[in-house]
Structures are given as structure tokens and as C-alpha cells.
Image 1 (cartoon, rainbow, N blue to C red):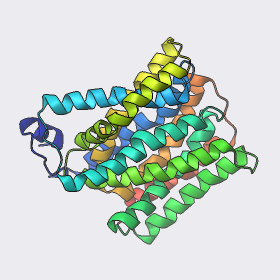
Image 2 (tube, rainbow, N blue to C red):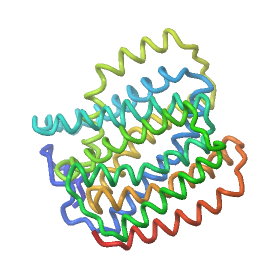
Image 3 (cartoon, one colour):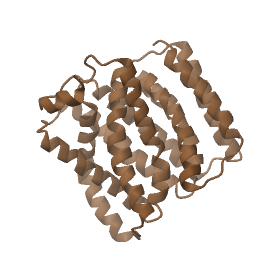
Length: 305
């Protein structure tokens, strides 16, 4: 029985990793990466009709309404008090910090450029995991992770002409807060279903995001178009809720360091979406970086912890 079905059968918090196979965890984490790969293009669409603050706050409110509704419908009890500090870290990292910082960056950065900068997230998450929960991946794992991160960093520096912009600083800050949120979320997903982790984090942030959304919508211009509404709905429901549900679930099964390396594929997927959905043009360096990153993914998935 999966964690989700266990949660449906009983409102009590269950152990999230009970009896699930690593292959299933890899599939779940990969689905999360696929959902996340659409976040930047969807954010770019959303910014055509919303300001950065209203888009960030509104997406969190919509996701919190859905998550809160599920928690109420299933009569899920409040988490134990010892888990609230971890949920707050998840909220600050993946509900507030990462969405806001990346949205601010995408005002002046292309989605392709942002995608390769955020490609450093797997290594950042692995470092946070080692510091926070004492995981000790093998040397082969670290070597492959560093090579993959180096390839992404070289691509980024090459595309920016060797100088970091304000958008890059936003993105690097987003890496730090998101890695912290991923680490805490992956840890909590071992003692409660993944959907409850992100669900409670969203609800916990609602006293900030709801008034923030009302204030931002009153002061930033809003243009409801097909692109802006679609972008908002995707970042709210696809990226902010459903993507994180399967992502935390996968991390709980296969481990935070190994799951985080699957995200090396995320910038490559985002590059594809940037071309297909936004019409952005890629340089020759993109397929070369893709080849290097895919090799690193294969190595990290085989490396034993």
C-alpha cells in the first residue's frame, strides 16, 4: 500500500517509505522533475499578465486552497509539534523563497539562462543533505555530481559573457533556500506522506501569502490572458503542489542525494520547453552540456551511498 492510499484509509500520519521499491521512487522523483521543468516557461507566461509579487503570492494561495481542501476532506490531523520547524523551513524555501527569487530573476533573464543556473540545485541539495541529516554519498557520487555541476556552471558563465547579473544573484539565492526546503521536505517525507509535507507547508504560509496576494494584486497591473492564466495555474497546481507531492515522495524512497541528481536533467528539459513554448533560441553549447549532464546522472544513479 502506498503512502497516499494509507493516508486515505486512515487520517493518522504514516511512514512514507513503507515497502516501496527504489524504481518507483525514481519514477516519482522524475515526474517531479518533469513538472518543475515547466515552471520557468510557465512563470514567463504568468509575468505577461501579473507582476512578480502578485504572481508569487497568488500561486501560493491557490496551491494552499487545494492542499488545505485535501487535508480537510481526508480529516488529516495536525502534524506533531516537533515537525512544525521543518515544515516552516519547507515553507520558506519552496513556497516563498524560491518562487519569489526566480520570478524576480525572470523579469530580466531568459528562461534558458535561469534553467542552467538552477541546474546547480542538485549539488546544493546534496551538500545540505550531508550537513543536515548526515548522509554520506560515495566518492564516485560526489565526483559525478561535481562534474555535472561544473558543466552547468561553465554553460552559465559562457552564456553570460563571464559576468554575473542581478538576475544571477537572485537565482543563486534561490538555490540556497530551495536546497534547504528540499532537504527538510525529504526528511519529513519519511514520517508523513509527501503530499502532506507540502500541503501543511502551504497552509502554514497562508497567513503571509493571502494578504500578500491581495496587496500585490491591488498595486500591480493585471491582464488576464490565455498565457498569463495558464502560467499561473501551472505554477500553482503543477509546480507548487502536484510536482512537490511526487518529488518529496520520491526523495523519501531513494534518498535525498540520489533524487537530487535527477534534477540535473531539469535544465535540459526546460531548454526544450523554452524553445517550444517561448520561441527562445539555444546556442551550440546546449547539446554539449546535455550530453555531459546525462552521463553524470547515469553515474550518480549507480553510485552506492
